[in-house]
Image: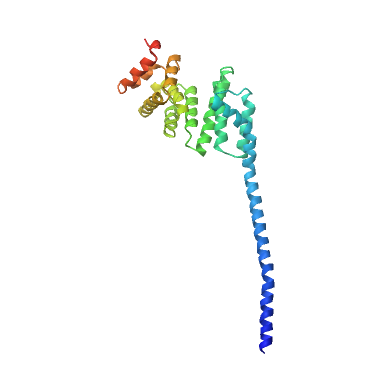
Length: 253
């Protein structure tokens, strides 16, 4: 009785031992299939995003040259605009909307095209900015571009103050935007509300601290009206005004 019991136990134990590799092999196969399916699914989901990014590369290179060196696109803008819209159709991302807004902004600034094309460009700037800011509101450059477009399209405020304020609130210390903010703010000084005027004063002092040479150059060239700057700062920042007068003395009478 003892021997058969031992044999039976060994047989059972042996069968279990022999079955274990089959059991784990099946589990590994199932895991492998699940991982493969998951990977394939992720690839399918990410493919439109990757395709959109690859399609946008020529536009991105053009925009990077503009941002880094101020180099305007040598190629016609319309094909770049179309390519950007195609990228948006593949993947609705704020980066593509922002790029589209800049391309239309350059169209609006182009004095060689008919006036209606300039107007169309600035109208598209506002539309692209709205789409981009809906996806990612913290974009000081997009807010400022929108403010410039609204300022060009209308002699009234029509949202310029709000867009200007949002540009500052979303990125107060943006060295690359300071001069452009001053140009916009002082050109529309009469239409700015008190809050916007306070922010313009802040940006003026900040620009004088961080980019004094560029501010002086802009005043000397007439891009910034010193008299308007003086009208805003005269009651609060006389010392800064004196520094500005000394810096641009040959141009002030």
